[in-house]
Length: 337
Image 1 (cartoon, rainbow, N blue to C red):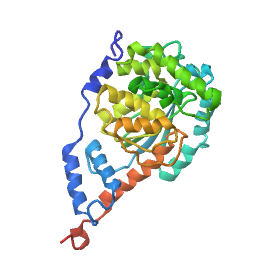
Image 2 (image 1 turned 180 degrees about the vertical axis):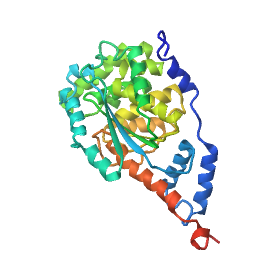
Image 3 (image 1 turned 60 degrees about the vertical axis):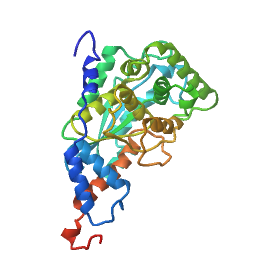
């Protein structure tokens, strides 16, 4: 990677992302039209199967799904914007490793592998109200690390995060990308209310005002207002696209990282689906900005990739129906007259 311009490689990748595989999509559509069901009877499951074909380049299948949870700490926590201390991030990583978290139970139930990535938790990013979160070099290096997480034949990537303060970071990224007011994007996160919620809104306003002259460049916005888990998630999304791996995005923080890439290239997250709409109010607003429809709406706001893991069960079911169902001819069932 160029020592003088660490983002150059990523800019090049974002300008040359592979398109959907049209022959694979056409083959999937043809088979879908022959299966033993009325056309469209499986609703969005059919849409999911077509999405899998288009972005994997083969018949819809999910054999090696993985949940990747990226954990980072944030200097903005100094502004007292969360009821929980940053030590909770490390403690929760330990909880993941001991199979004690919600994501562990969902992964075991849905048969998903889980990898948790500790992103220098002892070294929080810069407090974005007074300085950039990361240097360009550190941001690019973390994006590259995120790219390396997509390995080992993964064929469905479910992205999650853990990080005290990261809904504040997500709100800052969205405010920087889309404008409006800080209050439009800031929500309770892990339970901020009253004066703490007001501090959270004020911190986002101050951060975006400080960096306002640099927000037209999405990667610069990411390194100034983002954090390590956001950068790693962005890298993982890019790597998945290059490797023909469809992606499920979890909640507000993950979707905010994806939004940065869409700002850099409008087609950058076409291989991604929104797993669920969380209870964090900025998430629905962001999903609407991205023009996507979430697969689930369960009122969740936990993070950890929990919504993405649950949505993976739908994706697996969609693939199984598409490949396992008989055609009318195979089943000896009369087709539509």
